Image (cartoon, rainbow, N blue to C red):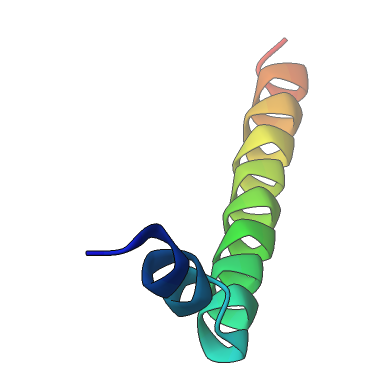
Length: 45
């Protein structure tokens, strides 16, 4: 597979948007878990 075809395939708008949304979602989920553990740790004392 030629490099140019591969890069244009990866740079398609739909895939870029989907990757961006997945990254944002993963960070939001990680932040939620972090806050959950932080609050839980503070309440256990």
